[in-house]
Amino acid sequence: MNENILEEIVAESYRREYEQYDNAPEHNFSIKHKLNMKRIFVRYTRNVNKIKQIESKRHFEETAYSHSLSLRQKLFVAVLIIVLMTLLVGWVAVYISKDFHGTVYHDYTQLTVVNTDDCPQTIEHKYFLPEVPEGFELVETISSSMAEYNKFTNLSTNETFAITQHVKKSYSSNFNTEHKNINQVDINGHIGQYIDFSENEFNSSLLVWDNGDYIIEIGGDLPKDTLVNLAKSAKK
Image (tube, rainbow, N blue to C red):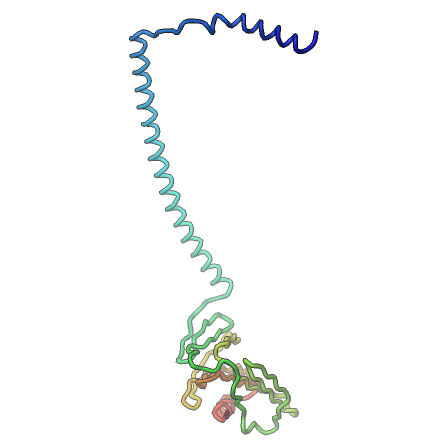
């Protein structure tokens, strides 16, 4: 028996077995049954709506609580980060002067320039020292469009100092000021920032000032008075 004949026999048997159900007359429900079913569906609809309202209210409360909790968590995380950063880098303070502002950490200070308007964008004029302390001579010069560096060394004592001229817009420096103070000094009408690194008989200091066009640094193995006099003598 091939497959097609078998399928026809099975189909005919199925048709004969269920033909009586396919041709059965449509059932007509009683009025009582219809009223009962209507009441059931009304009650079902009312209960579904009530459940939806309860779930909607609960969802709103959970969302509001979650949002509030999220804000508290964010605030807590922000405070925690600040505390951890303080523990990692030490206390932090803000340093402000006429020409500079910066951030003072426990072991260094970062200085940046307050006013960079109407200043040269490159090194257009170079500043030099007409006279240097006795025994010092120029041993190194590094020039670029943004900075000019000149180093002087006393070959007898190995003491050194340097003068560096910076374009104001690119200036930002970090200085080791752990246990050191920044003091202000007058440099030809401009307020300079002076840091003394000296210990015992060892002289070391740094002077930074804004001359209106550039930021100039002079620092090295020199006492404060010598450093200030050199700064005041700098010429264009």
